[in-house]
Image (cartoon, rainbow, N blue to C red; front, top):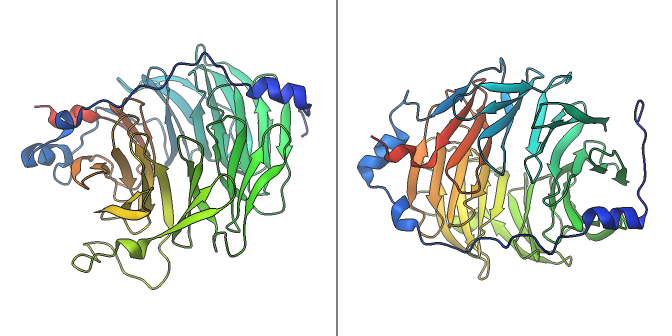
Length: 410
């Protein structure tokens, strides 16, 4: 790329970067806090509120156009990053919405913001493919690259290695801030989403033609390629991996979510029709159609063998992974944009195009609470590891902070 030195790692270099640390802390065990999270009808009313209610504890209003991307510092959850249609990106305090620094230099909509695993670096990416990395400590830009029109951006979960997918189909991997890079060859189709597998040595990617690939980071070879009749019949919109690394869950605008083993076998197809409820097939505000309803978000639960699938018509389906049967079906009044499970509890956060964020119990289908405040569509959401902080970005040009227990106050 012009203005940048491109380096290709040899096997030893890559192995050094992706080597896992045996001394990493073990994940926390599941705790029993469900009773504390249950609210009665009166408390629910406080949380959701009537039209015009704002449950946000902080509102960030520096953007002048739609906020496309938000993320949270994974270590302290005290600062957030946001990027928008105004070509601007900020790091700001969730306590008072005060900008800590602006991440300048983008010349197109900033669609990606993401913190490194240790919270020391934050990366931004815009639609034109300009990717920048900033040091959180002092707001200094430490690295930049241009990779072509950007589709997604994410960090490796244990090291300062950054990944990106482009509309031209390349999948990039960079060592930051050294700048060493590796490109996984395109076959002419946009890579629309990606996920680092739990072993830290592979990345799964979804493509605009409905195919799914698993790439080996060291060899840059595709070890799994799902396509044709086995693949989706339209573009892959979202992807997740089970905690043990054995299964992928993909969603597509063809209306299907696919459960795929990381060895390359399609295990099951999750359909919206499987959750058909003849007594409530068309809740208020959800239009019926003969066309497939796009799957916009998928996620595996961390504490139970459950998976969530969110649809553009507002349906949220909770599947039992072992039996591959529907466990619960929840309804939003507008399309679901993002999903995220609580890290310790079978609770799933979902944000939708009606501007509302909901918290559901994946075991019972009960709506625990909801947060209002946005006057337009929610476009992105980030949740802290402990589940106490939710940050959202919206078409209303604001980012908002909601606290889990905000609905219990007063």
